[in-house]
Image 1: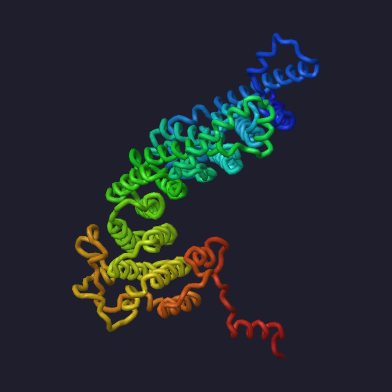
Image 2 (image 1 turned 45 degrees about the vertical axis):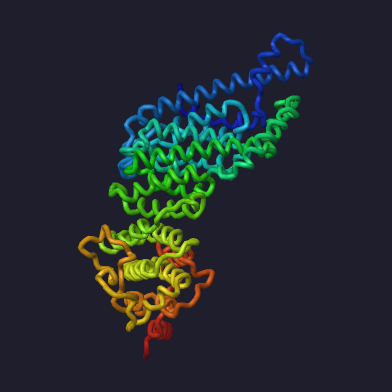
Length: 524
């Protein structure tokens, strides 16, 4: 009845089981088959020990399950993860004994994943990744992500993907905040390397796997389990498990994009699609492009999700969907309109810069070359957007402009000439001003009246010293150095990561001389 003693007993049992559980999986069917058979003394003693160990371990897991169910059962209903963190912390709380039980599940799962009842442990830990209690959610997500990275057989990856897919499906695909984004973010740690496009390799592995099955019939199950624990995995079996996990993963992703485009899971799902899109085949790529194109055309998604969709489509068309005949002008037009929205109505525009850069790099810096007018319009609007951003975002955007200048020199060189006309029929889009119907404009129709990079020239007078120097290099169309890529500059000069102005503000000569006079003391 003493809660303190009960908590200490739980922690002690977790530590004991972590030390005494063997590294192999006990064959339960073999234990039941040996009951009426005469065995050697040593073998019989081992069977008795394994049987009692399994029974005691199962009883302990039942106790942990009851603690978690009583502590978190009522909190798992009617979850809304859209609430802010302060109100969620005050609203959703659990006792210390429940936290210890969750910690016990995670410890046993991380250290003894090759032993029996792994499926039961995963069935208890995976739903807790969606817990409204932040401490429980973070602990379970950290445990599962570590297991996915260290998985050598592919079994854990497949089991986790299936459990997460069922969880998302039963919770309505994350509508109304029923699923926390951390649940899908864990799947980004899957070590999937099997390619659905390589049909010949799949057939060869099936044949070799059947031949190896005949040779392994006489092998002991304990030897197989020991090989798994030591890191010796069957690559053919792992390939099959990864193929199944990849199919289940993309079924879940497409289901969320189709049925819940307004869900909080959408940005994480799109990031996951871009993470594994190079492994899918042409059929899945075609369905994916169709779904994401409909998503971009609709007005129900946020700007960040739309930019992520463009990036995902571009990565798909550069990889498995390279054979698809798709007009990419629609995606370029969305990027062009999205930059105007960043300029006019997004106060936190610096947060959108990384995904905007990824999308433009994927669209314009691939194999396909675009029309000069379209490139000139995007470069112009990028330079306008840079004037509204912080120094680290300016450097990243100007670095992207320099990359586009290098790739499309013929389109960008006239923009630097103030007396050169790019084409006839110039309009206000060249200056970044909103036209009467900017939602339906195609950047290929944009013409610049005169040199369109005046906003970039204005940055030569920026207060940041490196911005001034870097913009001078852009106006001269000089090549980028390896350490001047967009994301390296964005991180290197971001003052919000470590604090302070980068580079540090130098001390003025007057301040230094004033300090020296103060050291001498007052004059007599």
